[in-house]
Length: 144
Image 1 (cartoon, rainbow, N blue to C red):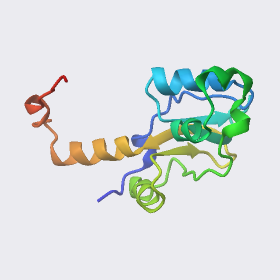
Image 2: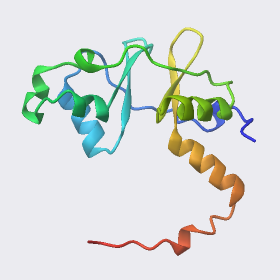
Image 3: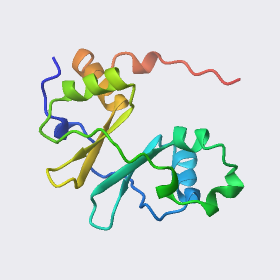
């Protein structure tokens, strides 16, 4: 059962961007730091939107052009969110229904408190089923 609170599993120290940041900043965080989505917040930490690697790809802009555009030009402003006291199962349901991979967690005033991802849900379920991490030592890596 997924009846534990999101606050226990969310990432509280979230890397964010601001609407006025350039897409160059976003590119660096997404592609060089291996993030997939970045919440967009204002100076008070209120959620204003989200920008993802998919947003950059579908924009058809060349990397050289990213300095000419701001986050606000590409970000999604209608964002599904949950609260810290919602259950982890609610996040799983949103992910499955809408094919999202990250959900900002906000308080009643819209201030960003954290983020939960599909990876967090997978880790939660895996640790419940295999608390001693039995399969990690059997992982084989192939270099091509």
